[in-house]
Length: 214
Image (cartoon, rainbow, N blue to C red; front, side, top):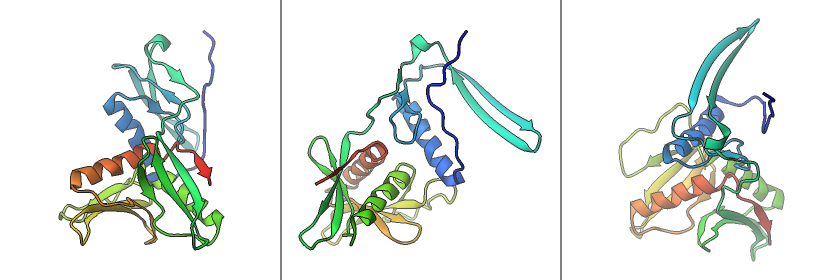
């Protein structure tokens, strides 16, 4: 039987980045959705209900390999090497003050996130977009109306903060570990549940969202 490598990538990643990637896979498996193979979501696979799973821990000289493998007949799970898992687009633009900003627009026309601040240079705004793409999918939620503690392991280098504003509406902001707010909801929601739905939409759509410059 011939073998074909459909997708392969290898690079050093932080534990938190690995946890974020694995969490995206786990969430897709749990929802029965196509599983993202790469971080951009351009390659996906539709995992069947009960694939064979092999977990292996090996020692190769001074190195250790921890491998997890799922296997099933190809007819039971489709592979898409040209997937578009995102339903949103980053719009990069220059505002009236000459600063660069971005907004994340869903294909239904709604703006589901924005930069929250202007950047002096276009490169800074692009860097902000990349930071959001890297951190939003695995970021933990800090609901500031409760006393629940957020986990300290895993996640990403940023945290979603959910809060009630002065007008009694619910908003979220994505705060990086360095203290900077790298994205916010851009609008208030009438209920906490709707704010959480908006936040989840951002998590799902940022990885594969293209960037359009206006």
